[in-house]
Image 1 (cartoon, rainbow, N blue to C red):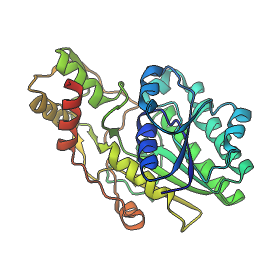
Image 2 (image 1 turned 60 degrees about the vertical axis):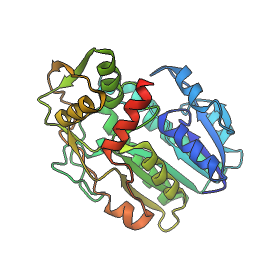
Image 3 (image 1 turned 30 degrees about the horizontal axis):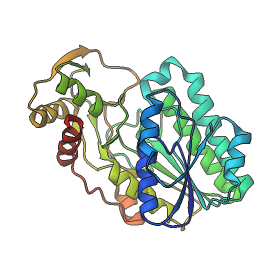
Image 4 (image 1 turned 45 degrees about the vertical axis):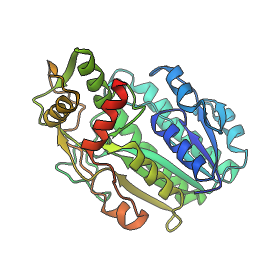
Length: 311
């Protein structure tokens, strides 16, 4: 991928990895981020401190400021800026609507106003909600979401569809399945569990351990986003980006125990109503259409993550 790419949320976990990869491939990259305090803004600044990218401190909720940035001649926007997290969205749903829905509308309007022809949108496996047993296909019905966060992602996907149809903006929606790797957000399970186990603290363990997740290494997600930036076939498309495999919470903890050499101290908590029982991606469509491959197996990715965390 070459050209000029604006990444909203570009100082975050996935965005900063993507920026680094695109710059290495010869693209010109802009990073737009508001450096909010959902987790340490200093961490985000560290993520991008050595990147040869233009950085814009702006909020996607500010339509006028966003338009100024969009008007700087970008070929594509990768829209990753969002309020993240299923559980926090329950406590503050209005903020999630403002950022994830209205913010996405602002991004699409800015793209329309600036004549930007392609938007790649970072959605979530949470949209599958109560869809039943996986693996989930992009054609799977979305009968009910389980959290305000998931609902905002469904709404944002629909806005992408509308703007593709009405305004000839090619929109590629990517449903990410539980991304992990270096620099992972500290509130996510692998990061939280690893730190706690290395420090001999309790880990929050919700339910009986039978819930399952499809964990996907950030390097594979970045490869999928890059492929989506090169996609030119249809005006609107949705792709799963996952590993195509899943693991139970109990087995994840057991794997981390073996890698760290530490016994997990479990803080037993009840299952949460907003949590999906299972996420599991069918990646056939992304494989056939984008050439997407999940190259990092969970065991290798976890080992590397633990080594980095222990350093």
